[in-house]
Image 1 (cartoon, rainbow, N blue to C red):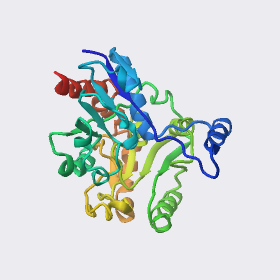
Image 2 (image 1 turned 90 degrees about the vertical axis):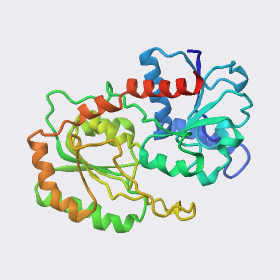
Image 3 (image 1 turned 90 degrees about the horizontal axis):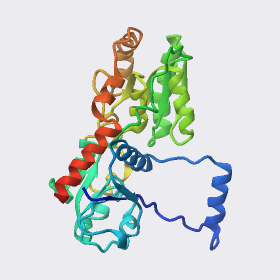
Amino acid sequence: MKRIHLYFRKPPEKDRYFPGDRYVFLAARKLFRPKKISGIEKVFINLRLGFDEIGVNYVVNRPFKEIGPGEPVVVLGIGEQALEGYNKPNPIIAGIALVSHPTQWPTMCQDFPIVKYLQHSKWANDIYIPYYGANICELWPAGIETQKWLPEKDKKPVYDVLIYNKIRWDYPKMEVELIEAIKNKLTALGLSFVEICYGHYQEADYHGLLKQSRSMIFLSEHESQGFACCEALSMDIPVYAWDQTHWLDPERHEWGTPDVPASSVPFFDDTCGMTFKNYAAFDAGFHTFWEKVIQQQFSPRDYILKNITLEKSARRMLEIIQEVYD
């Protein structure tokens, strides 16, 4: 196969208060804040790691003018600007974050030669199919770096439960009805726990807490893939996940899709742990979950190794590329 052109182009930093101040803010962030990698950027990084693992010939973010005839093009950047200036006839495999919803760019596949638009999971893909078509919308799970997210040897857990808090909407209500209720339940049972909140930690912090934890409660309205949950599963941590089953993004009403089925754990089965729909279901099912944790009846890492490793994800991408370019 010819060399593959991979692209990840983030929106440019904008000035805030006066011309050129973006450079000051960029320098300050580099100096005072460790770099955080977004889930979207991790998708791109892990694809590269998967390609490296299986020996694929690829280049990254080369000027579009360097794309040769018949060379595959994969664009996983953020926003419409990721394709700005593209003027080649080569078909594009794009996806994940060019748009948050297809109504934001309904003519995308007419404006550029996009022949495949990728989403990680079925529920997210189903949103795009009515707009772009089933022949263009394609499933492609990103791979998990399983050699980094390894189970701790001779583990002596410090915490019974790690609470992963990624609740984004209606927070005051959910804090009382779900988060605090769960904490009160764990306290009443005499179980030790620690909480980590999305957007307020470095990856090393999360990795370290997983090493110290026996199980995890995952609180997120929905995920197209759910890297954090998958990384916990890769470390053989059983997960009890809040899965309320509907897309709750407040903008869904503006986009005209108010009632869409969704999942917080699209990559999950009963070997990984259990799910609950609300606090009443949490309360009813937690005893069963905890007993299975104690008796080591879950095997979450096996699920990840069977389904979404770096290699499996990279080979799936190659299948899509070959479908388009062969």
